[in-house]
Length: 113
Length: 116
Image (cartoon, rainbow over all chains, first blue to last red; front, top):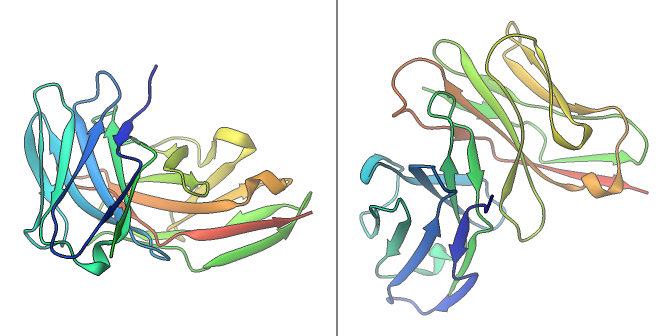
């Protein structure tokens, strides 16, 4: 069974640019979560999508947005990039609705210069 | 409000010795508790979870965790550490109450370093 996949692996952008990160969940998983892991910090919850709908959102500005497609893959968009957006962005999908066990992808490393 | 605390930023253990990584939590109602491990430049890997039942939960790579309701703790343990266990460990919690709209809260992480 293939795991959660994310693309691209690495990305370098400059301040003010826009970026789109992609995530494909494990087959059969309908929920996708996005997290930001800045250097030296823990995981900060960004967004949760389930069945194509945004279900919950973390404490991030509106320039962080996303969507989930009918095949349950997801995109995370970040507009007007700032230096502090440099981080590892992790996507996770969920198999167990009752307990929320999440399985993570390898992440996308975003560097903003 | 839900919260989870990992009081130690770093834990250093000699290979072959037992290890403990601490986690305490606060939730309304009963907790669902998780441990994840992150190796350098990798995503998080699921280690184990507590939902209900036996307070001692066994997981991957020889790790186990003990749920202690009175102390609201879920410490990760291993009887004999390996150098390959060196990684960043995250504890996470979710309340069993409410709908699935509630989200998991992750701790700040504990870096485990095993010296040969």
